[in-house]
Image (tube, rainbow, N blue to C red; front, side, top):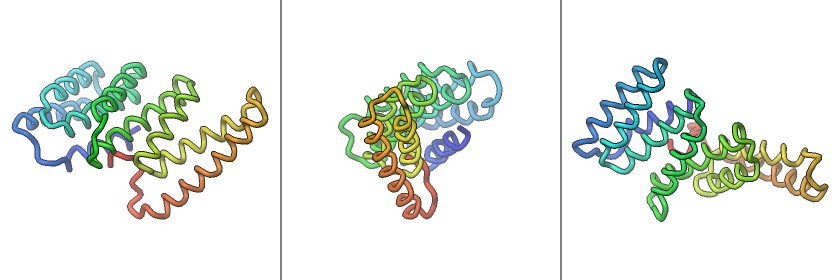
Length: 193
């Protein structure tokens, strides 16, 4: 979780030129970071305020992702995390710029992980992780998807044909993960990076 937040924080610091009111959003984010291990309601309030203060769309999307990850990793409010990730996805519909597509891919990956690990909606997790992998391939997304497909392929409640297909897909995606890892010298593991 810390890696996920650090990745988004790093991309926040490297963001394109900000609007005048983005300075206040960044200040609020900095204050929220100082309170990270304190009262979750204070951090949540600061991040929500930072989102409303942000004029630039990339900053607003990044802060929305960070708040979703805060809920996912710190407060355990997975429904709030899901809603925030879905907001990022809806706010990036039709976007062609790579940065915007990466925000969407990150939200899809995070949704897939929540559906997989917390909501136990494995079919929805496969859809979200597959969409993320197609949009912005990373070894982390491929690895999560291959593990999930392997799990589905080992599920004795599924038909033999379904299990075989899932295992074949898992192997294919695992190979993609290995190739992505070889190609990725700086080991960027998340789409938003």
